[in-house]
Amino acid sequence: MGKIIRKGSLCYSLIFYLFFCLIAGWAGALVIGFGTNDLQEWYHKKHEELAFFTEPYMVFHMGPRGQLQAEMDSVYYEGYYKENIRFYWTFWIISNAQMFLIPGWTLACVLATGAAFYRRELREPIHILLDASRRIEQNELDFTVVYTKPNELGDLCGAFDKMRSALWENNRRMWRSLEERNRLNAAFSHDLRTPLTVMKGYADYLEKYVPEGKLSEEKLLSVLALMRGQIERLERYTRDMNAAQRLEDLVPQREEIPLEELLEAFAETGRLLCGEKFCMEALSNGTAESGKDGLGGETLKLDSKLVLQIYENLLSNAARYARNYVKVRWGITKGQLTILVRDDGPGFTQQALQNAMKPFFRDGEEENGGHFGMGLYICRVLCEKCGGSLSVRNHEEGAEVTARIGG
Image (cartoon, rainbow, N blue to C red):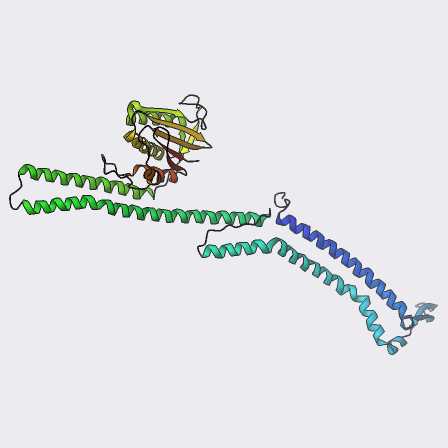
């Protein structure tokens, strides 16, 4: 009950308005009562010669046992009625005015209170919500619902704005997903041209010279090997493309993960991918302890498979360019896992800093050992799926990529 009638709530405001309605009604009833009584008395005195008057007299009659009984009676003189009928009706109206004025005043107070309550407490938020509903219906979501009064309608407007914000964010993600998929398709179509053109050239070459017998067996096998290489490249490319398309439909499966177990997996994966170049430490702004000591059974609620996939992709990219070391730093801030991967390679070019997280970006280099420029793009999408982000920059010795996951 206390929550319903909290200060500033609609119920509290309604009680406040009703209190003043009661005071106004009571005061008005007193004014009407005393006013009509005074008016009645004044009018009676003003027209006293026309007022009612009586003259008493005795009436005698026999009782049931034959005794004589006397009673008082009176005679009414109604000459005023014949002389001035206006006085009669005016006096009657004044005498009975309270019967009509007090209920009328009470009704007027209730109506005035209701109108004031609506105008001051209901009209503005109702108009705000109706306008917001109309704009949402027209797919216009780039606005805010603002109503600052601390009552239930203020809470409703706040919830409505959160709903609008969620719709805007979902639409933004949907459009971004569609644009991302269109870019993927465009990049896929563009990059398919090279192997298809090469294979078409080899096919034309074989079609021209094989019938004439001008190709030796060794040359023929060499051309076929080159064609096989292009076919394998297309297979890898198609596999990466399918994996990228499936990312959009991925839903993280969060579960409690012991932090110590996750760090052990990080260390093992780092040693396998980077060898002696690998080292790992804790961030100073994250968990206070470095390494794995003193973790105290801390757990994180994350999708461990996606976290490890992000981590492996970051390490693979760093190991490709590192000269002497790949350094991994980790930290936990408000339940969000931060993974920072540094290497001492050449770093990102200016173009790569802007486009490294886009699909199939290779910074001007051709295919290198099956590398199609999908690693950082996949990491970015997975981080966003897990409620985090991915960022890239250069440090004084090379490149640095930071993944934030969960939170």
